[in-house]
Image (tube, rainbow, N blue to C red; front, side, top):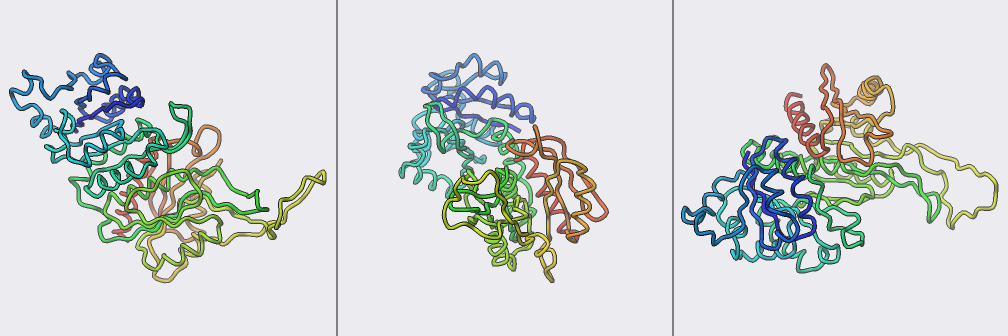
Amino acid sequence: MNVLLGISGGIAAYKTPELVRRLRERGAEVQIVMTSSAEEFVTETALQAVSGRPIRSNLWDKEAEAAMSHIELARWADVLLIAPATAEIMARLASGAASDLLTTICLATRAPIAIAPAMNHVMWANPAVQKNRETLAERGIHILGPDSGSQACGETGEGRMLDPDEIAAIVSGLQVDAGATALLACKTVLITAGPTREPIDPVRFITNRSSGKMGYAIAAAAQQQGAQVVLISGPVAITAPRGVIVHEVQTAQEMYDTTHVHIRNADIFIATAAVADYRPVAVAAHKIKKNEQSMSIELVRTPDILTSVAALESGPFTVGFAAETENLREYALGKLRRKNLDMIVANLVGAGCGFDRDDNAVEVFWQGGEQAFATDSKVELARRIVKLVAERCAIT
């Protein structure tokens, strides 16, 4: 796989040597094209060392352009990735400008183009930037992120470039997906993701550590395989893939109700959400004051979404998830049989695994079969899981 990596002038450019390493670990050849402003943040020497190729940056390089090198590079690339993609480079791409080597190649290539935006959160929220994002997405450019969190400027919000390993995992699938038959074409996939929040009073609730990353990665992978994706999401700090239909919920009951509104149209149901098993019987109308040395809260079971879907007559192919701290295989197989599922994806959670991470390892079980996936990014695992689900769904 040939990846042409365009680097534009943002502080996140300091992460690009690591990105090159991650791409090459996945078997890619990487040719780097820099803008002039990118040279202020990362050196050609470092990038040439990790890529093993001379760095290109000048459209007017007489020696290279004597052989129409920008056309040669445009044809060489299987995927063109711009990371980081600044507000400026997004504006140039949206307008069709070709003022430098990188944007000229973007106009001249037939390869899939992906950009990983990186900028201050206020810049990212600017209507002009969002309009450019919409324009680029409508033209088929893949928008990778951005992520949310602390930024180099000291502020916090949406605008961070995705982690290099996550970008590498997504990009590694683009060329494969572009040349492959969509496994889920004409299918509707309904996915639940994230945690639920069960209120105790107006300021407190019962929840769990689910980030929603696995569910959102599953949604993106299903969409890449041609599915119409409906995502029912608990409260998370993730931007859904463009084109995915999202319904935001808070409680287990809301997730249950929303699932059953949309389940009739689903061919496949994938329940990645970490739904609360119990909720308070009564919710206090006002904040509970700290008056007593101890207090108790009576809890009652929440509705079992997965069991209810699996029990539907002529229901969808149903996939459950099981997060366990011990006895992974035993508990997963028990849940598979007890809930009458078509498939279950199980992983260990606890210290150093499962929650609050961008990687994971899973074991997948179905009646009469199983497959283990070693530790990898959640993006890559999602792609493999969706492929397996599509294969099993076609068989059954």
